[in-house]
Length: 368
Ligand SMILES: *Cc1c(COP(=O)(O)O)cnc(C)c1O
Image 1 (cartoon, rainbow, N blue to C red):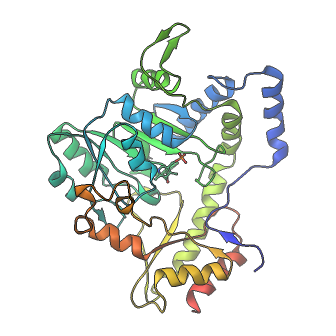
Image 2: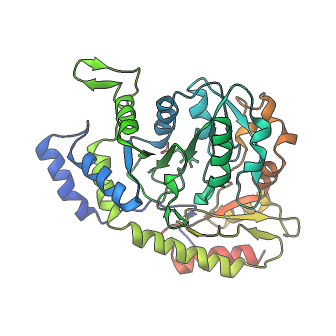
Image 3: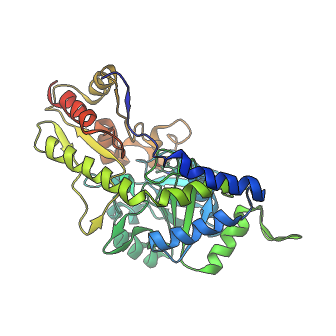
């Protein structure tokens, strides 16, 4: 193999199909601030995802920061250390203390059985992540939230298009934040959205993402600039024409990995979650003691062969310098997260990964 194979490769439609959108932007001079493509994309995504309301953002990190603002979250928030750093950073940008709890090793999602012990009088919300697009224990988390009067905001960055028990996974919790970053299942170069239940909440979110402006002279809140521009929105509209095909190609790749790696000594896989129509966003494997190499040796061996697998998520957020001093970051509080983080390797998965490339990757894993 000559070309390196990365863990993901952004999907883009044919360039010719984007040109008419560009011409419209150039001709109209509508570049941003709730332009026509922005409105069209919000409508198209509501329909595609099956959600009542949705507010587009320039990226999911600003979406997370804004979601916490929208619900006036403060004090402490219970979250997972096994995620991308933006999950905890969004809390710190709101002057909120992250309280880490362990994950369920069967899903790598925040373990709902660990939440209650972490609740204090300062706790106001739970911020779980649908890791790899696999649904959290949404019912268990909601039960606890209802009992203790907590809000639930899902970091659903990985969960575009995932359906659980016949409806969008994004309907759970008070808010869900999805990412349209280049590396995600659906991309608008960079982008994201907050999914919310009603138009009143969307209104507040829309104010907050536009500096707090309600009209030309009225500023309702100390908002941020989180707006998605017309260039991003236009790409999103075009991407929607291809999303079903892109996800079905991902699923085919996942199935081939599962078939080829099932029962291999020293390689463990996550079981698919029941009642879930997933998006095959990631393909994590977990390297056990019976495998001939440890995870990091395998990671390096693959790189030498031109296969750039990624250790999502390593290191744990709770091990990073700005978090490791927190009481909840202590390793004995997070044994399953630590174990997953030391064993995980995410294999390349993206719509135009060829069968030949995939077989090459599998050969590298089997013939060590
Ligand atoms: C990608 C990602 C984010 C951040 O999304 P951006 O759109 O890049 O800001 C947040 N959380 C998780 C779990 C992610 O994977």
